[in-house]
Image 1: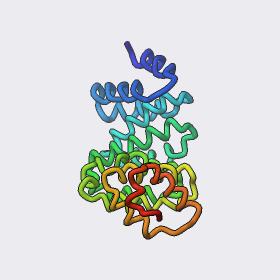
Image 2: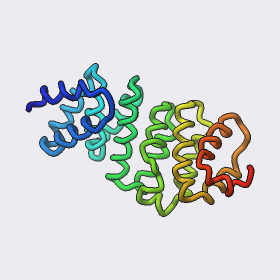
Image 3: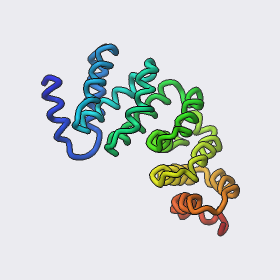
Image 4: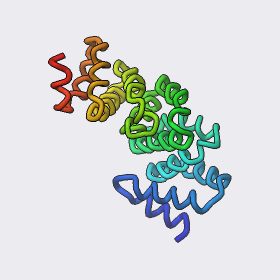
Length: 211
């Protein structure tokens, strides 16, 4: 089966991302980086979102060695109007962080968290879930919580929901770290919304003590 035939199959996938990820992995195992760059660039020009998803998977693999592709992910892919493509951007960002090491990626994580584009900010909060299952953050859950908490008053509801869900993930293993963070929060509508998402972990109630 050639690439065009594979793309026809990919374009017909109604849900999920595994076929796109698997196709991207096969391409990465078959072709040299220079050809992959061109292939990914060509794919991203497609009007078919499933094919753009393949492109973004490839971008995540290539970005480690290619600053131009990494900047393209941050500045262009983040503006893609299809939410499914944004889900893959989050995964591609995690691929990048994993490849260079999460501790080394901290400056980049902070940079993306402060981006003016909500999809870029969300790519971080969503892409690294579950944060404390990742190397470095597993040993430093307080750092993960501090980084995520910086989004609690984000102007985007989309970003705040991701923030709350990611903090709830962490609360299951590190309730004391989450509660310590919540003690410093204010009472804004945005903070209450994020806290409500965190407290969906019913076991956290005993730690919060009615806060």
